[in-house]
Length: 244
Image (cartoon, rainbow, N blue to C red; front, side):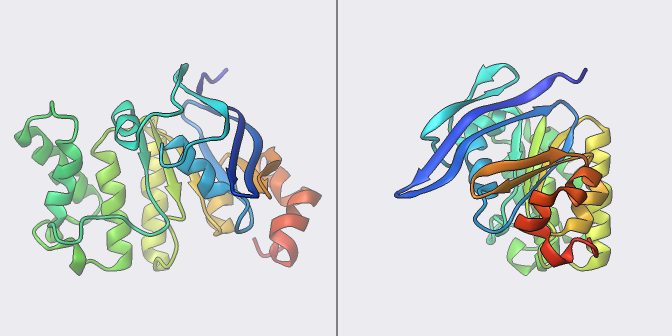
């Protein structure tokens, strides 16, 4: 049986009179590639923001590798092995591509610069960004920026990666390449939670899919179970479920 890496219990988040998460329970096993779907406003990004330390929960608990992490800052969680991407790509626009990588690689205060540079060069080569290493990040296309964000996360050798809409606005050929990298990292043991409105990508990549609607989990199952769940079809997929 797969060991639980992330254990979320009774998670509640309110914004004024709006309850974005209503006592959410979710367990993520080591090595899983889990899809997180739901309509806009269902609580997906809010959930990732709490797990990665950007929001504080109003109630509930989160255990990571058996230890409680609620209240920890994002940089502390990153050092513990929790990596995160964002819907709007967050890279240092004025720094070069390589410098962006080194910011992450040297953030633990222990890694030597030569070691970080070697790792950065290897990842840039893997993600086909090596030729852009000395270019400012502001010159990258949207897709290249997402790849740089991928690479920077992997500089931290994360145990779990939270990906929030990584395929938005990405060319189909680049999206296929991103699929390959996600599969490769997962096969190497990295646990991944993937948010995407691209149902084709979710069903292609993920062995398990969790569906949120109005802050509640309404389905937790295989892609096939998710496709055929009446609550999911009603809340999210609607008339598009056949194409997906």
